[in-house]
Each structure stands twice: as C-alpha cells, then as structure tokens.
Image (cartoon, rainbow, N blue to C red; front, side):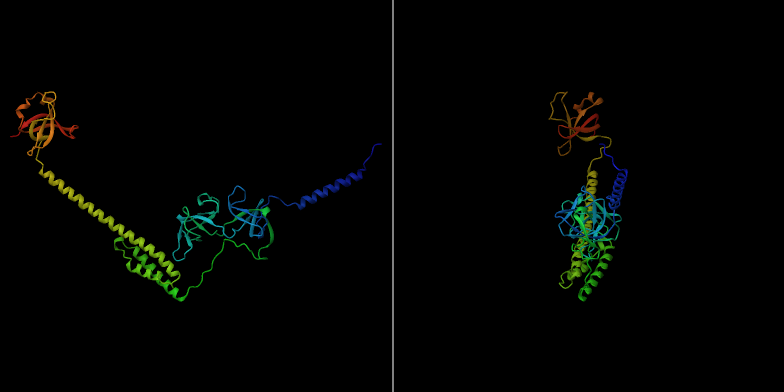
Length: 378
C-alpha cells in the first residue's frame, strides 16, 4: 500500500528549516571583519608567540604565558593587535640618532622619516625588518642600551604595535574596568626635581657648554679648552653634582676629542712646513749640482776617449769609454752611422766631445752614447 505524505506537513517542515537557517545566518558574525575595539585581554596559553605582524610568516618578538594581560587595540582576521608588553623594544639606525648629553638614556632623532623596526629577542637588528612607523627630526626616543650593529635599541614609540593569534586571547574587561598587570613598554618616566646644589652645578655646566660652542667657532689653531676642561673635571669629580657630574664626564670626553683634533691639525701643518723646507733644500742642492756640471754645448758627453777593457779588442766587439778627470767612467760609446768609417785611434787618450744620442747600457746599468762624430777639444 503506497504511503502518502500530507502536503501540509511538507510545507511546515520547509518553513521550519528556512527559519532555522535564517536565524543561524543572523547570529554568525563575519569571520574576516577587521576591528578597532579596545579592551583588556588575557593570554590563555603558555609560550604564546607575540609576532611583528598579523601572520605566522612574521618573526617572533617575544613570548607570553597563561594569565598574562595585554591591551588589545584592534584585530585583523584571526590576529589581535596589542600594545608591546614590557620587555619589548624597537630598532632605529644609529646614524639618525644623537645621544642627548644633558639627558642620559634619551636620543634625539636627527633626520626626517627615519624608520623604526620591531625588535626581536631572537633576531639580529639587521634581520628585524618589520617596519612599525617613522620618526622625524627632533623626536625623542628612550635608549635601552649601547649601539648594536649600527642600531640603537629603543622603547617602542607610541605608534608601535605587535600581534598575537586571536585564539590565545580572551577579553576580560573593557579598558579602565580593571588594572593592567602586564605593563606596556610605552612607559614615560617623570623626571625628579633636582636638589638646589645640583641645580647650581647644572647652571655652571650649561655655561660651560656655551663656552665650548663659542670655542668651536674659532679656527683650530686658536681654540683653547684648558680652563673649560678643568672646570668640567671639577664638576665631574663632585659626588653631590648628580646629573651635572654625569653630563660633565661625557662632555670632558667630547672636549678631549676637540683637543685631539687641534693637535692633529698642528701636526699636519708642521709636517707640511717640514716637507716644503725639504723640497727647498733639494731644489737648492740640485741647482748647485747643475752649476757644477760642465757646459757640454751640443755634445752628448765630454771626456777622455779610451778603448773599454770590458769588451774584446776585435773591431766587431770593440767599445769605447769616456773618462773624467778623476779616472771614473762617464759613459760607454759606440760609433754609429758616419762615425763608423772614422779612424778613431787618433782620438785615443785625448779629451773629446761626442755628438750623438744617449741610450741605456744594460750590461752596466749606465749610459751608452751612439756617436756620429768625434771632436777633439784640446
């Protein structure tokens, strides 16, 4: 017997299913919606990675554990944006930061649009490439240590944020409802008012700084930091001077650098003067030597004409030489062109002048004259 389904029942079932789907669609939030909601969050796991960006491809900056609290300032997809927890830091190039001698631990930015990168406890500065923002000239940063690989470690600026997977964070309250246990790295320390004696020494220090600036404007050979340096050392040795003593110690090193520059300048000028004097002496000696040389006129060389004993006496091997008045060899000589047919024996042991060209004589590292004519001089 064929069963029949009541059409009314089918209609009711369809209606219920439709309502159920509609209700589910209304109650399910958009999974990919971004949010700028601010609240206090609590970490729900241990060794939870805090990353430089919203994704596992971004490097780890630090780790948090269960019950640690963070200030959430937004979200993106399945990642939550937080303020950097205590212990986090950023990197900035040392070439764009000048340490403030009057405020140890404070750096002043010296350029515009200077990049700031997210720091990591596991990565070197050069490999910490996640850009957090930019600073401009005269912005101040808190220095957290000495230079490392051409970078300063600094407290994260106000624009710096880090990221944590949303599944490891649960909201526990709105901002202001409960205190935040995990402090943010973006802390600002209020200065403590110095004692009266410290204020007095600070005034002296400021005055000495002005004197240094005035001295630096003078030519190097006119600068004199002796009195300024002694005054700074006196402040630096004062155990009650507090900040002024620290500033003075730092400035003494700067002054020593200025003094060294002056000494180097003097040494360079002295060497230059000594070099000029040496060149003058050489030129004078050269001129004197030239005056002592005989006037050869058009001759390549003048001297006593002899047969060289170094070579054989055969005509094809015979070489000649010119001897000076002290019996020293002036040069060697070979007849060339028209002189090859001359009877050279008639010039032997006589003072002659050779006409020709001067070449090198490799065998003796001396001179060789290939002469075309011989003229008896006396």
